[in-house]
View: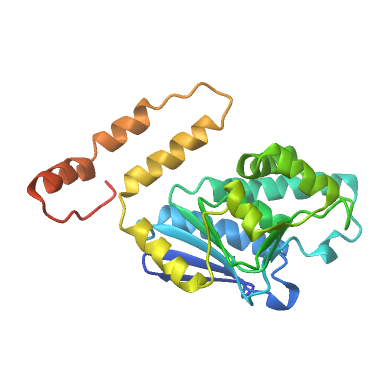
Amino acid sequence: MTTTDVLTEERDSALHVTFNRPEARNAMTWEMYQALADAAVRADEDPDIRALVLRGAGGRAFVAGTDIAQFRGFTGEDGVAYEKRIDEVLSVLAAVAKPVVAIVDGHCVGGGLGIATCADVRIASPTASFSVPIAKTLGNTLSASTLRRLVRTFGEPRVKSMLLTARRVDAQEALVSGFLTAVEDDLDTAAEQTVASITGGAPLTQWSIKENLRRLNSSDPVKDADVIASVYGSEDFAAAVESFLSKTPMEWRGR
């Protein structure tokens, strides 16, 4: 799906996705959610893309939740369908095998925070903030799947206080909690350096870490022999051993 409300650009071996409704603080429409899912699939399937970078336009917000106008006339059944759709989009984003980076400048609210939880690396400006103020605004709720994502990234006690009191977490608290990787004044430079670190690394190692962490989050017993065999049996690993021993530069090929 194509929409000017979500811009995509392939640059520096990364797919950069910009939520582009600054006049609405990048509040998500149904079309924008679909465009995000499409971008996630594109990043996963294109061998030339090594990372997916998410950012909001305008400097006021990463994403200020879902566009509230879309909730007019909602029934209970509509709410179930909506939360199911959000779960589907976030699941696609969380399943991307390549590193996902969220660059947060300004407010990261509701559905925007859900999107940010699916990133592997989160970098924010000092003025960034994080909240799900539904107990004060719409009086709606979250699916158990979305709650689980929040708890895994923020911790249950903090998530409870955020949701029950509708409080906002600032960048410093998010950094201390471990949710953020860094707080930076110069987000452009921080994004470039992070992408360079990712694209200079071993793609199969990055995939294996994400895949085994995904399996650890399941209630099923963890079986990892296939992942380990794929990495140790790869051309990249064999070449890297020789490169290390001969002290020559290594060029990662992802196979």
